[in-house]
Length: 209
Image (cartoon, rainbow, N blue to C red; front, side, top):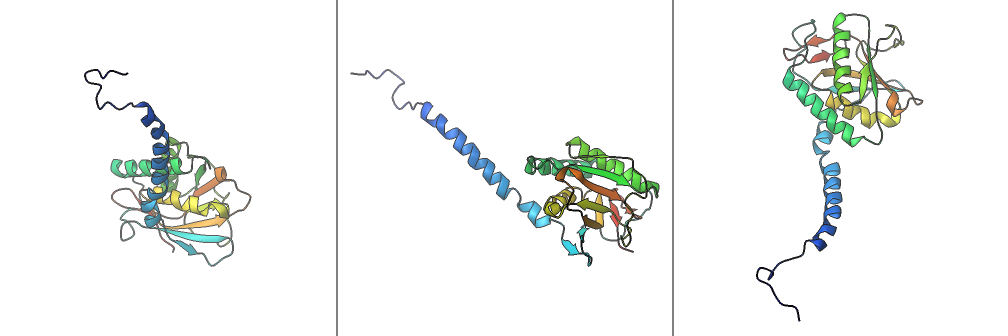
């Protein structure tokens, strides 16, 4: 016969509850993965057909108007923090795919290389990319508009749109997507070109001429 000791009445062993911790953790992770994408899906920049085979265009939202200066302005600390937070979430979502973006820029105007360096720095903070010096004509191609160009495999279109959403604190306006089937997910390229105008908070707007 087991005697009840003072304080033992109503006591519940924690050992059976321990087996519930792992399943609950898995459920929470799945909920975050699927329902945590809601804002991304809602705000994902629209994909517009470029009218040419192998190309599309993404339009990034931004401040109304064309900006107020052609001189480079770094984005504000608040906007940079927003971008870094989005990039951290992006990296967590695509940890298995391991996307990596090389950012380059045309030789002129000088504001393009400054912008490219800043974006490359933000990407490198989370191991998502880097800025790289490159010959100014390496991304020239007949018929390309004078706006930023991203090169990617068609299968990575969703990944790139989510990446551009994360970079919206830096960029606004039109981005051309050029599809190249042999590029891996860790070989995505962002080439800055065009004549951006910078808002008071440092966001660069690219509009089709």
